[in-house]
Length: 272
Figure 1: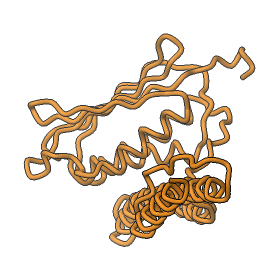
Figure 2: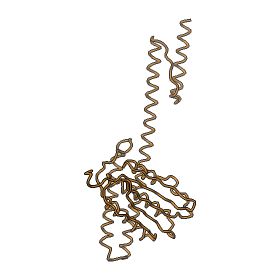
Figure 3: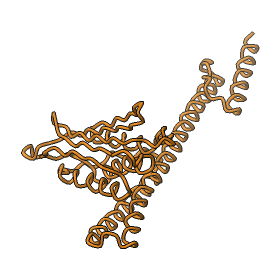
Figure 4: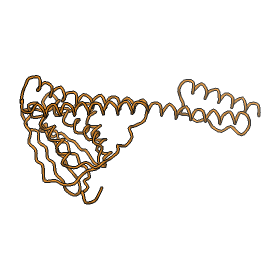
């Protein structure tokens, strides 16, 4: 009976080994005592558990790395498109009085592209999610200027724009590069899918110690389903969360796409 029991245990271990070799790492190996077969069973189960954990981590790392590359590629296309637009305007000789301003914006976009590529290479060195951004004070006036530049480019691209900027004071704690990515993603969607026959509206206000930015635009009939994979919106939503804020979006029955970004505001006298 003792030998029969040991033979059965050996058969069970054989079956587990065959399962593991076939890729099934989910079934744990039951304890078999403290003799040599029991030690073998425990070590085999530990190896199974370690293999399963390593495979899961490798899969998650590959997925995170692929998501990063996809998101960064999407983010790079936006400043490149804007840069190309400004260069077209300069080449055609439009608005000669504004040439120096357009050149300044072109230089700024090349800096944005360089920062994005530098960050992409940094994150691609390790298969881990991006680290939290380093937050520094950014005045709401600078934030308004960034939005105004995007609205100006929409106007040059043929869109009508209606903006409402409430009197503001204070600042946010943010990462400048990340926030530029956030707004580039939002305005990129408008350039791709917006209906130029309807105005793009932007509301900028501060209430309850929070800065709220609401963007609204009509969607082209052929693009009623905004960005099927929503890479840009997902990236923008994550950036808002890293800044302790929120990003919400919805599409109405009238094919109006609305995005609301909320970021916490600190007054200058707080010394933050």
